[in-house]
Length: 195
Image (tube, rainbow, N blue to C red):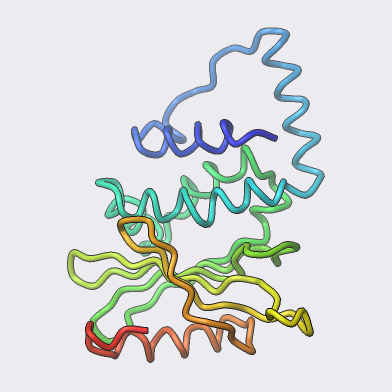
């Protein structure tokens, strides 16, 4: 599996052609690539491809001029274009483990994404796409280990529009309910008091 396949899905999404275009007829080489892709659907995707999705593509789209399109689709429950973008490079097995929930928390609209359980750090357990007025935030709960390597834990993090990765520290939970609860606390703080 190559990152170029994941990036191609990203380009399709950005140009609005995902799910609207019929695939081109396959040559013998194209057929072999498609057969290889079907075999990859039966195996675990490469951790670096999952990382690319969770730490580069999602915030990349959210903080681009297509951020509203992505957010509005997911917030309205139209998840098929996103799943199609992810399914080709990462496989059906991976996308079947992705869950979405949407809600309005105080002055924020939030799309919570739960990913298939990560098998390597720093892949995400959950991510929150947050819209506050015209501003977006991308907050993640990432799988990781404590410095002492004593036990598995999670880290609350955020990607900023200028692609800085902020690590707010270790957390002793990994479930969506606790992530949502802490997210609500974060979103209620004044901007200067953000973690």
